[in-house]
Image (cartoon, rainbow, N blue to C red; front, top):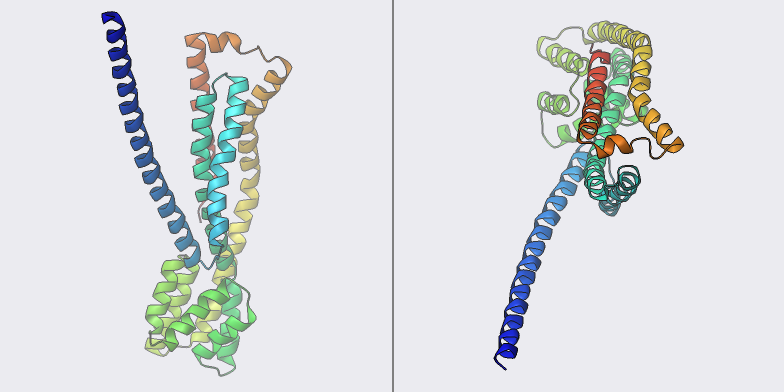
Length: 294
């Protein structure tokens, strides 16, 4: 009888301990989910504001869907791949989750960089239109209006903002300063400096524009030549970066047990880790040495 009572008390204590641990675990999970949800909402809002500032309008639902699907798909694919190759689903899932969270930021950053590059490529055409309009007797604001009507986005959008800001009472100096902060480049800085100096000193702005057009075109031509000459090195860097990965995949497809000795040996795992780190460092160095800034 006493032993039965003792067993019952022990059972109650164990059940109570399990309940307490479970409730604490639920609370911890709830707090973690709230923190993660808040961080994710802030990240999506930050992406939305950055894209809106660059006149890249994406529906909020598509933005949330992309930020949700990217880590989910990457986690599943990486977990399956690492589970089959290295027998570690957890490491694969964590690695895929990290990559999935990085992909949206990388994609949106590339969109913003692409818009800026397109804007900088349109500056010489915009200068020609401004110069032609000023030679025809139009004022600077009328010339900017003609630029907005003639050229496509993004340069028409950016100079359209200048016109709207001017109608709201903002000075051209401040509007061009804000444009320089949104689209920083040497060409745009030269353009805005020439316009503001000519307005203050009364110089021949059309002659300045002609000189700027020749300078910008010469720089763009030099930049294209440098890109062409450095393309071979960049292609070699890509090939050398992908070669170890392709070699590993091909060897594993021919013999799935080829890496079993290295994976089962601590020294082998260390050598594989060293190889992965060396590959990452090599890719970084190749990109750094292959980048030419003008």
